[in-house]
Length: 120
Image 1 (spheres, rainbow, N blue to C red):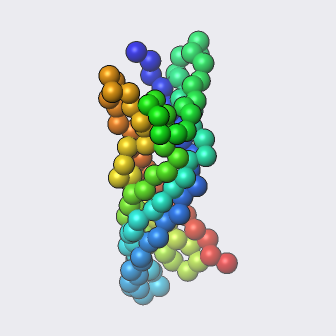
Image 2 (image 1 turned 90 degrees about the vertical axis):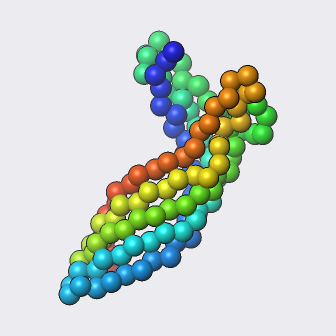
């Protein structure tokens, strides 16, 4: 057994609806909606320096990764003048790993993010 991180890089296209409420000069907002994503790379990064990194091939065969993912986003934040701070949670609906029948496994994307925006 090895400890490792699976890193998958995506190009993601979200389609979010946003509700905004103004409380004096402060803007409070919530948003949510679906996303679609296309994986461009992946890598298993082992904590053990003696283990080489592993890259899954993309495809639909066993022990491969799917290129496509889809799911939902929800989030909210606060804005003041030209600055916004937001927290967002995304979760994929499907399994992005095509596991072998003898060793079933599920890999779903879940992301919690904190971001800041500066409007100019």
